[in-house]
Length: 109
Image (cartoon, rainbow, N blue to C red):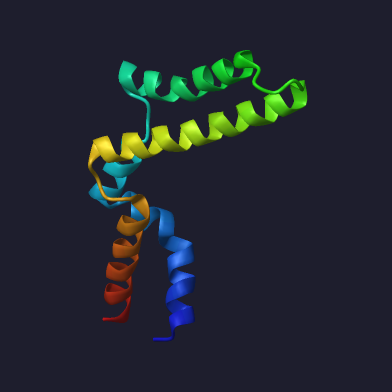
């Protein structure tokens, strides 16, 4: 079969194929906020941004807003990385690639 034919099949059936896979569903559920620790982990960027803003390291308000936003973004990315590391699962992109490869083998056979 042509790769474009499989790609069309994948585009049509991607969501169904992914949702049929238990590991994928568990990985998606892992990103949901289920416990107080999750809420605390995602509240940290807000607290960090407010602390930097109140610290007022630069004399200009616009610069303080920009720095506070950058701190919040960096802290959020760090918190997502920590949550992913603590959950111990594989990244969703790897799981999806495996599911796509399995679907390709089934489609071609």
